[in-house]
Image (cartoon, rainbow, N blue to C red):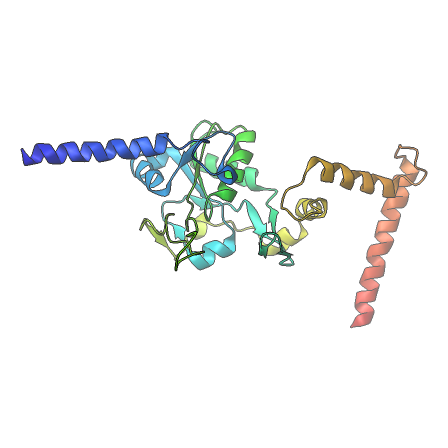
Length: 272
């Protein structure tokens, strides 16, 4: 009899876990954590699924390398592929009370590479985790737009959400991978790391261009910002303002750009 009751309780708990995963949708997920695909899991449910079918799932930690280095990483994660980097000049964003971030232009490419390395394809499940579910939602959308069909955002992330009131207000103690006592470690596996050099990130033209386009520093390039940037860029080259970029104007633009670089180099040498 006791054994029967225990079995029933275990079955009920398993059913509740399944329901919690299935009932996470756009109606009960905060707007900033919602994704185009509408596929969500919390840390505990993700962990339970990974225990059973980890070889069929790509689990990506999309936080910055700094976060990984100083706060650890889930041992179940397949790799760290940052969705964004901390801005190179640590630009402060007053509106968000945080340092700015810049997109990783190679995110989808690197994620795809990890997928193929595991012998999976774009129709297999991908779990995406960030600190608390905001970046992972954006990362999930990027992968969905690239043709991935089953991208799940882990809505409470690695560190969880912040407490809204009381003595622990502002602290991340209510959910998340770490707070759920799921396996993680400070000891990082090199094979799982995103190893592109800092110099490559620094010189990445795509990142610099995205930063220039984002004039209001909200970490999103709107259509108006995109058009304004390209209008300004084109206007600097189209010297006769006829709306056509001819070879002579392009040659002059390249010449002036080269002269500017040489001047900057000379000024730097003179300063030493």
